[in-house]
Amino acid sequence: MASGSLMAGLPGVASGGARDRGQRGLHKEFRGLRGGRRVALHDMNMLVEAGTVHGFLGPNGAGKTTTIRSLLGLIRPDAGEMNIFGHEVPRDLRSVIQNIGTVVEGAQFFGNFSARRNLRMLATLAKVRSTRVDEVLELVGLRDRAGDKVKGFSLGMRQRLAIGATLLKEPLLLILDEPNNGLDPAGIREIRDLMRALGDGGVTVLLSSHQQLLEVQQVCDSVSIVAHGRHVVTGPVSDVLATAARGEVLVRVDEPQTAAGLLRDAGMTVTTRPDHLIVTDVDDPARITQLLARRRLYVSELTPLEPDLEDVFFWSSPAPRRVPPRPRASWPGATRVCPAMPPSMPPLRRCLAGTRRRTNPSR
Image (cartoon, rainbow, N blue to C red; front, side):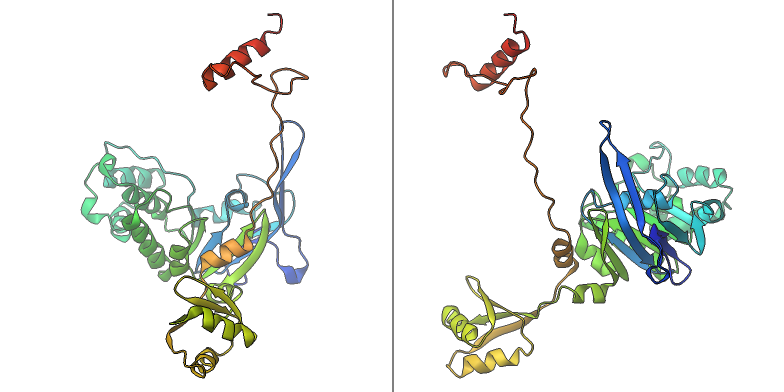
């Protein structure tokens, strides 16, 4: 799958253009009502290999939804190129749209109709064989509830039904935008198992999310992390995790303060915790036990700490700079909305009274 500078080495999805071909990444700006410009995507590059589950991660406002909408032809980027299964989009979108299924926002169904009836209507509209309905219900784990009215479904069941609706036409690419939103742990596990089953079945899954990162880590083969409209890191999950590895080791010992001093004297970086130590940049954990044992300090626990996607996410997604709010005024030249009022008056009444007075200067 591709977007802007997103291109696939194997027949898949790409966006942004291949770097080795010197192509520019995906760029998109939006104009504000007052003439200002907001950069949503800047030199965005992403690669999704065919037949894999790919996590598309980033905080709110990072450009994930803009990238997905560009891929689907809903908005047109200002620069860059996108390819899906070897077809340039949006130019050749009609050639591949039948192979794409999307769940971008909460799907709507007829609540008084059963799950099977809802899917049968959709299958008729899409000219899909009727036997596909029961196949999809089996695939998303709703076969036993196929005859129940949708209005009685949990949020997780509705989400699985929405995914089932997109699977009616047997897509090769499935795009999911925040599929775990609002789900309880049971629903999250159901969606995770379903995505993994789809990936194992040869469907390319693009999973966009900014939360439940440990779930993403369990289900995805590869990930791309974006921040402020820019690509930060991409690759197999194991490679991305390696970028955040700091060689940290958790150490438990009877005298942590004494042990911390000894390790620091040996040139190690040590962070003290109430009941343990965190030692950073350790090439050989056995050296810790050797140093402490010489002073008759014996380690009760020595555990290497492995990074997870949450660590990489927060490391690569710095918080945006805070801009102080502009002072508000009720008319030109005013400096305060609520002038001083008698202290005996309740705060809300003082504010309202001040607003009334300031909005009618003639009084």
